[in-house]
Picture 1: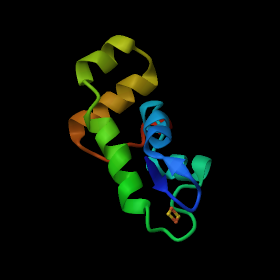
Picture 2 (picture 1 turned 90 degrees about the horizontal axis):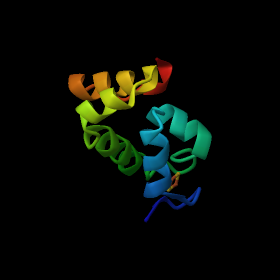
Picture 3 (picture 1 turned 45 degrees about the horizontal axis):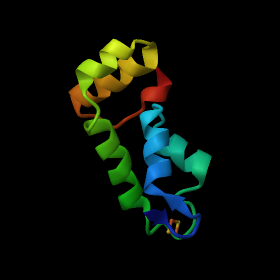
Picture 4 (picture 1 turned 135 degrees about the vertical axis):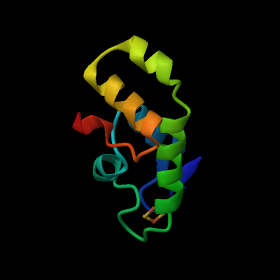
Length: 86
Ligand code: FES
């Protein structure tokens, strides 16, 4: 489903980037989502948040790597996802 009509960005594309550990701001910079009219920002942020909260924390630890551990920490703390800054 297209989330950002202005930039033609889909929820799948946003989710793929979020699962790779990118924060909303990084995804926005990379894909241009919510950079024109801004109507899609809430929906795009929801996709990123759902992506973080749907990741099983235990599985993230098993995948190893600093980004996975940072993402797991974000999920446990319920904070916004800035996983790629780890
Ligand atoms: S719909 Fe995303 S910036 Fe306009």
